[in-house]
Image (cartoon, rainbow, N blue to C red; front, side, top):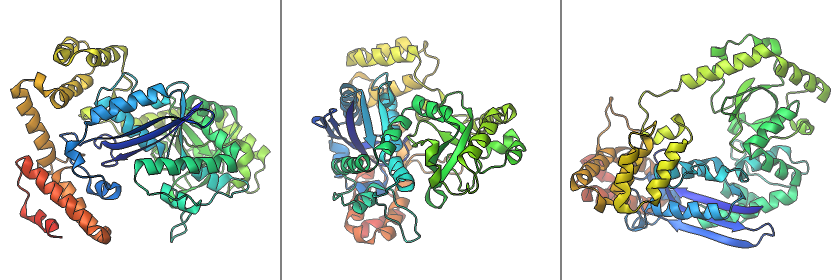
Length: 486
């Protein structure tokens, strides 16, 4: 199988409302020979203003935010790169973030029918951060090194891991990050091939589910920061989508768990897992490394319980039909509690799910048609789709990518929409989830105190915001002007 190392640099961390700025990837054949490289950057889309901390961290040239190729063009190239180099083991650090940024961008730009491209059958998406956490907690020889902060908390960001393991590179540059990532993976694979191989299996949802169900119990490192520790657990239910398992920690007393109502259990279904949390939702699609019961020796809190005791206890949890029913009901309670009455079109990727056959047909027809015919394709499908999400996104693309084929009235409406999205002042009734000029300046003010040695770059970003605002016909409030005088 090919291996493809990749990294994205973005303008923020919200995958619904941020965008990719740079992507770098290198594909290697099974013999380790370089066979393909992707190295692309792009400009800002018209309805976005970027997070200052992202621009401060990645050092992206500000002039390229308006003068580079479009995000749509970058995504077409990356989509083709990943297609022609699959099937592959795709590897990224904090892979879930990069994957979310890519599939949200593919969705919003109608790049292709295969929105979740990197998780196609035959592909696997491996997260080097999850793998590093597992190495730190479970590697038997443990010649893999991890730095700790002043509070003794292990650091799993790529720069810290690279420094601890003697890898030199310049962080927050996509090409440099990929080079460091490759070296990190090579160290891990050499140090503990068994953990590395189990991590690959865990990176494929159906294999992760199979591993979880075939073993009486599994072990993994769960939680973050102070809550991080190796845990032994048994699954009691799998969600309808197959993406989550409801699990019980084997240090639990079954009589204690059996007293929970579905509503009470739903309180444990969040994305974060507490240090002593007895019931939790385990994602099976985020590359968490599942290990077999032989690794129980590394798990604390199970003193006095032999492997045989744990096997019996796990079997008892798994056979309890009432407990399984409670878990399924709890998951329904949790999901219904987060329903949104009026989600934005960006959020409909998750609410309306995978593209159905008719939506795929529309995406295919839209992309194959000539620019002058695309509006006719949109019109032909407008009343045939169960959701309007792709129609709305197609209109947005026409206005951004093919404005010459849209009326001047529609172009004017699009400019006003972009203007309001960035410059409309938040109120108690209007609280946008995306970055606006107001939140951007607030964050920039924070950067002045958090990054005192980067005042020149902060000033450049402030000047960029000022120039961009004036170009759009917006006059910055006087309260913003102090940052311009750094």
